[in-house]
Image (tube, rainbow, N blue to C red; front, side):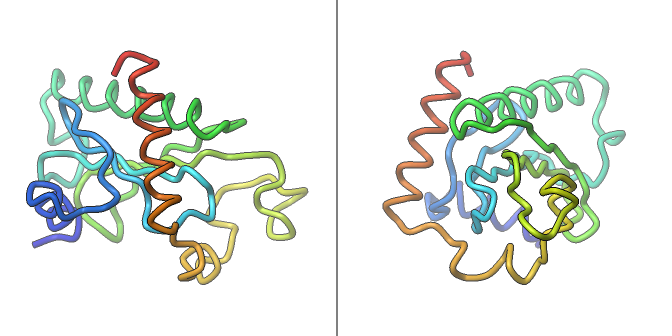
Length: 153
């Protein structure tokens, strides 16, 4: 079973502490590591590897849901800019990485703090000290739920 499918299975069993909300085409979850505070994933409900494997209607719904989640993340966490990425090289199951960006959030690792998140060293981004505490996770989930409600999702 793929990692994303296992995460979805954990949601179904009420065992995924990062789960925020189910939408029409996927699941909103906060990222396990929060170097970019508010980092969220939108996991596609179906185990497919590429957008072109969805029929046009389902694809449009999936893209619309992702855009709504990105807007809610921006509202909830005060982002200056949102980075939305659908990669799938590591986990071959459609899912979006939604990074709320703020001025200077790369520090010394980017040109004047500007650039893609992948310029930040992975070993620092995914360091154990970047995991939210249970209390912080609860607050972040509530902030994101409130923002989703505010924009009508």
